[in-house]
Image 1 (spheres, rainbow, N blue to C red):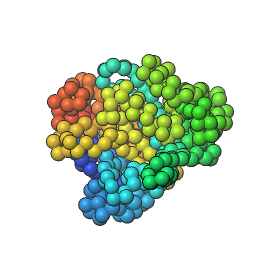
Image 2: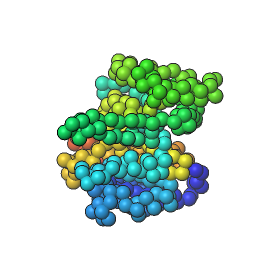
Image 3: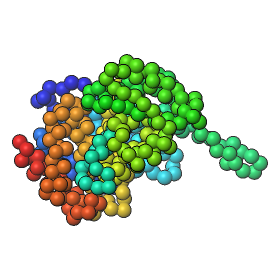
Length: 346
C-alpha cells in the first residue's frame, strides 16, 4: 500500500502481556523521535483482552485491524486451559497473514559475526493447521494421537512468489527451500515442487537451491554464511527462525512480520516473560526492529534505516545495552539512548 510522506497512517497498537507494555512504550518513544507517521489505535489482546472483555482476541481488536490493515503488537499470552486457541495463530487465520518474515542480522559481535539472513515462512498451512485428534483403544480414550497437516499447491506457489519478489526487491541473490520431501513426500514435496515452478520465473535474478531440514539445521551452525534467504513450511520455519535468532544473540534481537493481502502485523517474536514483567529490564530491540519492518512496509525505508543505524550505534558506539546483552541499561534508558542517536542523525 502506498502512503503520502506527510500522511498519518492509522495503526493498531497492541501492548500485549508481561513485558509487552514496557517494550511497546520504549518502541513508541523511538518512533516518536523519528517522527514516524503512525496514528495509534490502542487495543488489547491476550490476558489483557480477557481482563477487558473475556476473550484473548476481542472483537474490538479484530475490528481495529480490519479498519487499519496494520498493527504493531507486543508479546501475547494465551491462557492455559479454558479452550482458548493461540492468539497469534487466530490472528494469522483471521487476516490470512500467509507470509511470515524473520530477518536475522548481527548487531553486536558474538559467536557468529556478519550474519545477514532472512527466513520466509508459510504461515497458515502445514502442521499448524492442527487437525489433532485421539483414537481410543480399550479403556484409554487417548491411546493414539493423530495430527495431520495440509499444504495446497496454490498456497505453496503464493509463498514462493512472495519470497522471490522479496529477494528481487531487497537485492537478495539466493533462496534455499527447506523441506523433508524424502520422508513427508506429499506434504513437503508439494512445497518443493511449487517453489521450483515459481523459481523458473526468476532464474536470471535469484538462484534457488534446497536442503532437507535436518541438514539445513546443522549447516546453519557450521556455516551460516552460505545462506541468504530460507523459504520454509510452517513448522520448519517456526523452528529454524528461532535457530537463526540464536546466531545473532537470541529472540530479543529478532523481529517478525506477518503479511497478507489486506493486513500486516509486526511483532516481537519473543514471549511475554512474566518473570521479569514490571522490572524495567526487558530488551526492546526485537519490537523496535519490527517497527522498522513496518516502516519499510509503508514505504518509509529512510526512517527504517535511521532506526536500525541508531540501534546499532547505541549498542556498539555508546555501549548502552540491557542485561541480556551484558549491559546495565533499563528498557527506557535504552530507548532514551536510541532516541538521542536518532536526534543526532537529523
